[in-house]
Amino acid sequence: MNHTVDQMYSEWASMLRGFSKMNRRPHVIRTLTISMLLLSLITQYGCMGQVMRNAATGEKFSDLRASLPSPADKHGRLFVYLTTGGANAWNTYGDEDYCTVDSIAYRILGETFWYLDLPSGEHRITATGVQNNFLRGKPRYLGENSLDVEIREGESIYVHMNKTGLYQYGTWTPVIVDAETAEKEMATLDFLAKFETGITVD
Image 1 (cartoon, one colour):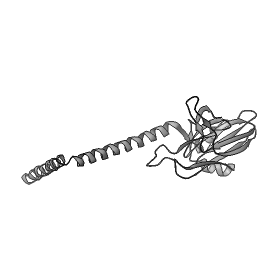
Image 2 (image 1 turned 45 degrees about the horizontal axis):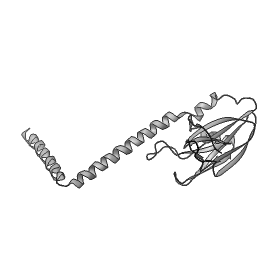
Image 3 (image 1 turned 90 degrees about the vertical axis):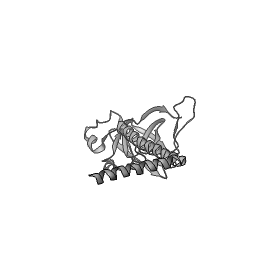
Image 4 (image 1 turned 180 degrees about the vertical axis):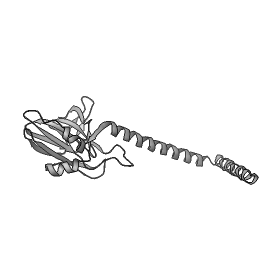
């Protein structure tokens, strides 16, 4: 017992001597403090990103598909989805950007999907470089890459946003995908409930 107590006191004394030495080296304390702050910020950012993603998304396509209502008369359905850019250890929210359908800006998020019911006829989708400033009077631009699609009454069309390059410097290219392939790829993707921005892009 006495041997154990002696060891405990010895360890405490060693710890105190260590702190005493650190006090004589302020740069060590600064380095440790900055490291702890950075670790705390990274942890909080990661948690916040996951919370934001959970709030913005809903059911997976495989669970939601059977309950989707049919398009209204003289309307067809456009699905937009992304199979890359999902949440990871460094970016727990996922890659976010914007696309346009005709002149309206919509949010896109990695490994999610959403859909719009549109009037039958020709529609244009753009992506990459969409500028949708929320401030009035600021410039707004359509995307650099565009795709024209024909919406047919009662039918669905599927557009995948192909991603190339790194997150901040990457490009999105809208590509039409056949229904069978698209629905397989979309099966495990989350529905992006908060995809509408209400912003008109000139």
